[in-house]
Image 1 (cartoon, rainbow, N blue to C red):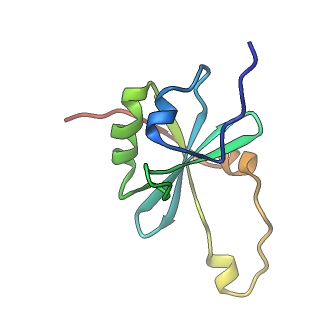
Image 2 (image 1 turned 60 degrees about the vertical axis):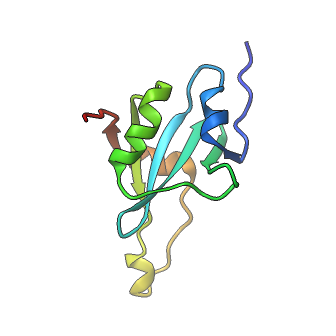
Length: 113
């Protein structure tokens, strides 16, 4: 069975209908405690969006866990944008999706109420 590539943007409703295998989850820290979710499968990357198509933002990793764990996701990779080099005048090299995931931190989706 061939697995289709992910669309560039995906809602939770569409994510819940994806065929197996589930994509890898990237929790990307963007600024002062805000996170966005990117989903990776093979060479495709999809941004998690709301029903209006706007990027879904989370105020903590626990909210990502509470959202994705019920869909069968067990963990994600925490990545972040590092603007420090750019702020002090050092050039920054583009980072691929694979490099972000390779150097990220694994986060378990365990939700306790």
